Image 1 (cartoon, rainbow, N blue to C red):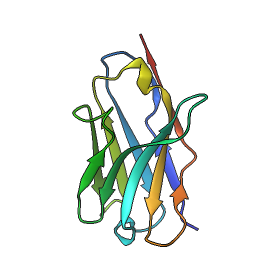
Image 2 (tube, one colour):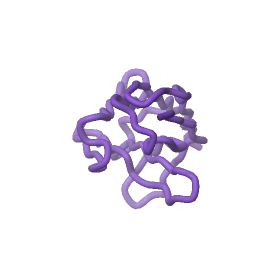
Image 3 (cartoon, helix red, strand yellow):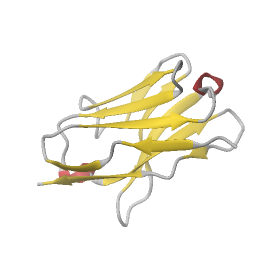
Length: 116
């Protein structure tokens, strides 16, 4: 069973930065893609950013230019650098691991709160 553990969340003022980390229990290169999702209270979980095993990235329009996803295959880590944070970025952020035609794996989530 793959385990994903997120860290790095917290309380930050608008305009500030946070760096989220996701530690995987096995080689992340074995996954087709790694991703970050978020879920705000009363809203559906939404995709924030994706990075494939080839290093291609994709971002939600709402975070383009502010967030950067990256990976360190040697350390089995995935990161989400979040800059210029806004109150609407407040959510629980989840790490996600994807393999084609197989169930996704999820972390337990880390809370990000951005105050105005």
